[in-house]
Length: 136
Length: 220
Image 1 (cartoon, each protein chain N blue to C red):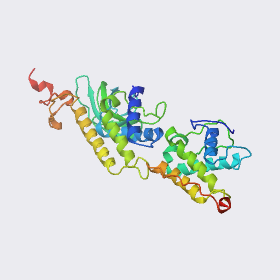
Image 2 (cartoon, each protein chain N blue to C red; image 1 turned 180 degrees about the horizontal axis):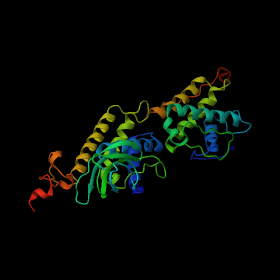
Image 3 (spheres, one colour; image 1 turned 30 degrees about the horizontal axis):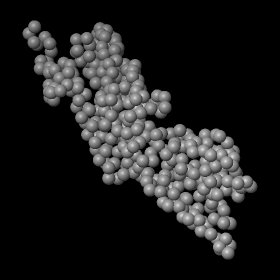
Image 4 (tube, each protein chain N blue to C red; image 1 turned 135 degrees about the vertical axis):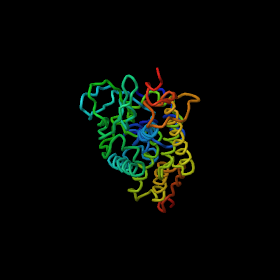
């Protein structure tokens, strides 16, 4: 998985790969396990359905796609809305991490995710602020 | 008969450019409602359905042979363009049940003109099964309808409360113009009036007047 480069964001693998880049977690052993990122991806898709039902209802009705493995399985998101899903994935992953990533950064990605789905302008991401332990 | 791919591509592209962040699936979903509203309100999709009136039978079921569902009944005429009054008893999409006002003593071959709209299921790719002339003839109207309806969606990246109502108004104006064009059989300068219904023997299609109650009163 590590080292995989994909610019198409069409598969589970490519979403997780891009999320690991943003999370600065591309070198094993990973800080965020595959399972954690899969849960984050599935959660981001559920939140996307709440905000933008048109992304799913015409194709899936009341069902929702979910993914259980980091594979080449296709994620059925149209190209113009793939980046928000990455940000949603990253936000959910960061929200679970209480060690070295400030919640503010997670919230900023969550805001980007939501704004890109329901608004035109994406809010800027907050800079990563070092924790007191890292500042020492 | 279905929408041609090149027409659909152009329409989808035009809509997508005006609706940042909209999904193609969402545009196609709204497209169904817009086309249905256009065809239902403008009476621009007619079909002549031939059938035979039999003795003492007043009830018939009409089913379109060229797709769509019947929304309303226009005329029932025989080969001499004599009208047979009827009412719609029941709507059974895509068909209708009609009841002739007067029973006939002899069998007579007639044609019923019905006005249709689109019906599910869609054709391949979730595209409404609409007539092929619809987009080339009325692209700007359909585009305004799709864009306007989507701009009036709440809390979407393409929501636009200022331009949405303007586009919907353009759409409704387009429906009104299309209805008049179809009424006048797409003729330029056709007369807008029609002879009083009680006196006419057949429809005003083609812009030709029917000034006499019956052909026999012409004295020929």
